[in-house]
Image (cartoon, rainbow, N blue to C red; front, side, top):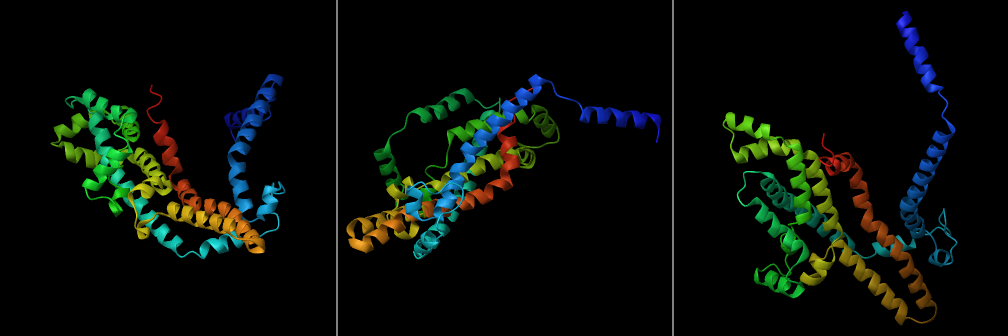
Amino acid sequence: MTETALNRGKTDNLKDTKQYSLSDRIFNFVVYSFSFIFLLITVYPIYFVVIASFSDPYAVSGGKVWFLPYDFTLDGYKELLKHNEIWRGYWNTILYTITGAFVGLAVNIPAAYALSRKDLVGRKFIMLLFIFTMYFNGGLIPTFLTIKEFGLYDNFWVMVLPFSVSVYNIIVARTFFTSSISEDLWDAAQIDGCGNLRYFFRIVLPLSKAILSVIGLWIAVGQWNSYFNALIYIKNAKLYPLQLILRDILIINNVQSALGTGEAAQIALRLANLMRYSIIIVSTVPIMIFYPFVQKYFNHGVMVGAVKG
């Protein structure tokens, strides 16, 4: 081993054994303490819902559930899975989510790219019109009448098409294109005889995987959790999304517990309280499983363009 390698090893050992000053230790202690507190604030409510879904509801309301399930039970999940319409709701929600994500990307991404181009005539005025809709809209009744006139009422596409445009997503994607896609690429593509459409599909989109993942995730989560649009614009129970079916199940159980008497009412009330936590788990687990696969793109896509230099 050479003398240079030995000196380098000694330097690394000195760095590893370097003692922090008192102020550094205090600072690290404060940072780690706050990080741990914020972690508890974020994670514990989710953990509590999970253990509460496996615990006796009276133990939950009595404050006996803290870190582990109390009086372990699967009654909430068993009662919930007795309703066969849940699987139809899952299927509908998956279709709404996948279709809505593709349609949302197909609408918002090209619009954002067009608004990021400096050679777009009237770009600032068009952007002003987009931003105007973030603060003012026609309201529920005009929107309902418009959807009905277009023949989308009580239709599969009412959950996808009318609300596919998101100005916020367009602004985020436009910022990405402006800060991350160099104009030199467009100049080079023009020299090679590349047109606008070919440049967008062959060069811009492959370089935009991060923002495509972020916008797609936002749209998918919004579609998965959507229930208000279905409540207003869908009357056919076969088209209900999962969230609306779970809501109806919970209402029915609450009504049964309120109308019952004696021991039957107590059992119905216990199941209704238990199913509240089971419904939260059933409706959120798919998205929680899907999120880690796009997390790396999510972090990069949100932060890209925020700092330049």
